[in-house]
Image (tube, rainbow, N blue to C red; front, side, top):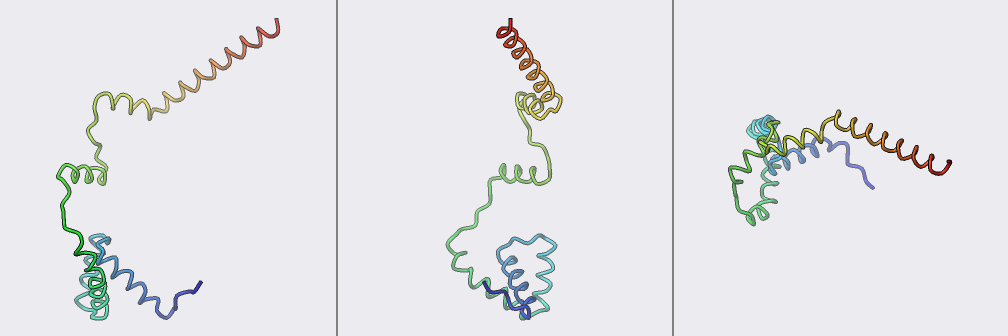
Length: 127
């Protein structure tokens, strides 16, 4: 296994940043920083253009399509922590399923059943 040349450390980070920019995986703030850097750093701009050229063949194979409005609002709701509207049955059982009190009660009831069965079994085997 070879290790990357440490003298090219900044260059390899720039390559990754350029690739992330072209792929569109940067956040808004990072994207704005890269766009500002593109205006003032010609070697970095050349890197970005190279990435765009290399990926343009792949890009041409796919069309641009927006998600349906309902899906987009659902995704936004999950990102921003908004609870999705649930049915009454879902609220009852969802709340019950996630209830610590409910599970403590189930555990206690289970222990009592096991103790009762053990007592009955011991009583039947040893009269």
